[in-house]
Every structure is written in C-alpha cells, then in structure tokens.
Figure 1 (tube, rainbow, N blue to C red):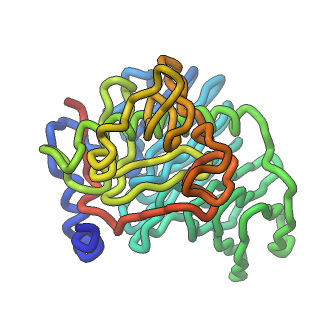
Figure 2 (cartoon, one colour):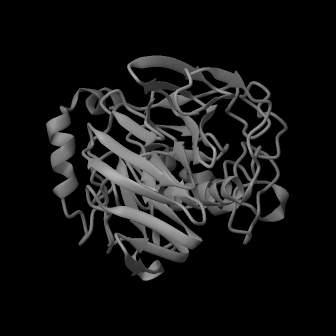
Length: 335
C-alpha cells in the first residue's frame, strides 16, 4: 500500500488540508502547538487555550517574553523559539514554507522532509534551505546557523554553500559564508526544552496512531492529528516508522496496527514492542509505565535489529522503513 501514497499529486495533498476529518481546525503551516509563559501573535497575547486554534498568518509575528512557543510547519517539521525571541511567517504554503528569525533563538526539528517540501529559514540576511531530516538552530545574538543533524544550503549575497551535520556558520556582516565543525550542540534551555517537547510530540503521535491503527475512520494519510489527551497535534507518517533527530520514534497507523498485540505492555519488567507512553524496545525491559515518556534506547543496548545506536533499537543501521509523501497533509483537528 505504501506505493499509493508516493504517487498522489501535491494538489490532492494540499486539498486534504481542508478536510474536516472530525475536526473544526485542521493543522497547517503556522499552527500553534504549544505555549509556555509570555507569548504573542502579532502583539496579541495567547495562552495554552489557543493551542489547536491559533494560527500565525503570513506576515504575522510569533514572539516570546519570558516564555517559549512551538509552531507547526509542514507535517513532520516543527519550529520552537526560546525566551525573548521572535519569528515571522513569510509563507505558509506546503510547497513553499518560509519563516524569518527576527530576534533571539529558534530551533527546527525536521522529523520528516518530503521532496515536495521547500522549507527556508531567514536569519541575518542569510537564507537557509533545509535539505534533509535533522535538527537546525538559528541565533541572532550573535547571528549563526547550526546544523546539528541533517544538511542545509545557506545563501547570502548571491553565494550558496552546503552545510552538513555538526557544522555551524557565523553570519557576520560582510563576511563570506564558511562552515566550521562543532563538537557538540549548545546544551542550553532551548535545546533541553526542544528535547522534552520532542518526547511529547512522539508520545502524542504514537497515541493517535493507535487510534487510527490499520487506517481507521478519519485517517487521510500523512499529517498533523489532534490528540486530546496531550492537547496538541501529533505527526503521523503515511507508512512505516522512523526515529526523529532527538531519538524518539514515529509510527504510521499501519505499523501501530501490526504491532497492536505488543503495544502498551510495560509492567512486570518486559516491554515487548512497547512505545508511546510505555517506552520502546523489542523484548527490552519495559519503559516508564506511568512515567509518560519514552525509554530511549529501548533498554536493549543498541537494539535487537539495530546497528548499535545509543537511543534506539532500530536506529543506527538497523531496520528503518519510511513512507512516501503521504495521503494528505490535513490530518485530524479538534474533536
């Protein structure tokens, strides 16, 4: 069935945004997915009650004081901004998604970038095109772009360079673009919060995937789907499963259905194939029953099928199955 998703035209996928699918508010680029502390959209204060409803329209500015915010871009890609930061949405099309970092710091988690996507982030007169799944950071004090995982193309003053993972580019005025290697990411509050939010995103996604196990009613393919338990949207791919850059897994409903007998068993020490709120790991020790988070690494020290990855049994050269562009970007909104 995976081939079907790969051949669907972009026009149908875009149209799927309008499908109500049990919903009053399907997600789209610019949808607010989390608010902490002081957050405004174009000067108007927003709170957590706005999550799932509020949009940052093209030309609108998402800003924080003592707070943080998470913004959905294309399905599988989220932008998070730190305290005292602001970003502007320049284009909210699925095939042309552009934002500008105006002040402070922002991080983009790209769990899934499809060939039809074109995601650009502007920072200090430099445009960054995200080329691969990964983790990207943008700062204005001082201006810099960091490719923590993935690959990006940076363009400034008519010159373009390719920046690979574990490299950063300082954006000094008038200076040529030049990438330099970095030993480790900047483990500050934004990174820690993004890691935590990635856990919640994966938890919400796994829980919603269970609801659509096997492709149940309301399932329209790749998209953001509302999870009332977490009060946020979760990302569900059309087919297969994979790990995001922080090491947390995302499942399609077809895999959730296939592994349904194993899902959720964490008591007694063994997890079977437990994921979502109960950790993950094939026949690994059960993960965080009642703890609400993934047990990264699946407690199987590299994984039964994996290639020795520290954070997951199937990562790092192990089993990895992905889907196509998907059956629609709309997903399900509020129920």
